[in-house]
Structures are given as structure tokens and as C-alpha cells.
Image 1 (cartoon, rainbow, N blue to C red):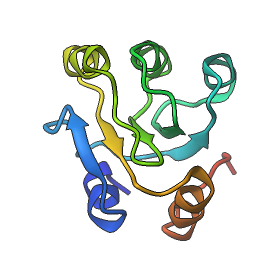
Image 2 (cartoon, rainbow, N blue to C red; image 1 turned 180 degrees about the vertical axis):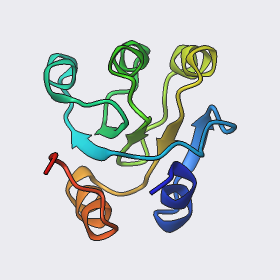
Image 3 (cartoon, helix red, strand yellow; image 1 turned 30 degrees about the vertical axis):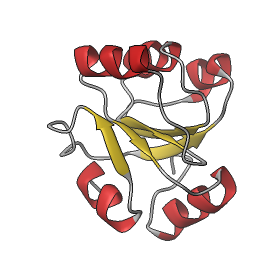
Image 4 (cartoon, rainbow, N blue to C red; image 1 turned 90 degrees about the vertical axis):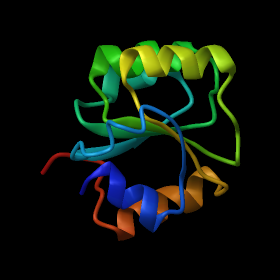
Length: 115
């Protein structure tokens, strides 16, 4: 599934890298600990978090994640948006809490582990 499909199906608001939404998602990872995502996130994953500071962009870049979804209508800090634009990493916002968003992603076929 491509990021564009997720944006439409989950009613996400895109905050950065709107021109980079054609990337395929390989799976999903939900965590608010940067070290956990560094250890366990995989290339092409969509990352679900409530963190809004610019360090999330560094982690997404290092792990080559497809993008980041912020939950609970949390807005990224302006510095985060600037860094995301520079790194061409899509940051999206959902009004849903993490648990519900992850369930919807799973129902859309986005898994959390490699088979």
C-alpha cells in the first residue's frame, strides 16, 4: 500500500513532503521511544508516535522509514516540519489515538512483522 492510500483511507493531514507520498509501505511500527524505533523499525515502515520534536525526523531518516503518523491530533513543532521537508520525509497527523490507528492500519493490511 502507498502512503497516498493511507492518507485517503485514514483521513490523515499531511504536514510535510507532500510530493513524496507514492512510496510503498512495507509494514508499521508504533512506539514513542526513539531508541526502540532505532532498534526495531524497518526500512519502509510507517511509524506511529506522539512525539513531535525534530529528533523523530533523524530517526526516520536513519532507518529509511516511509513516513511518520502523529496521533491524537498532535502537531509537529515548526522545526520538525522544516527538517522533514529538508529530508523529504512525510509527516502526517491523525485525530485517532495510537491503539485505534494501529487497528485500522492492520485492517487495511499493514502488518507489523516480516513473514
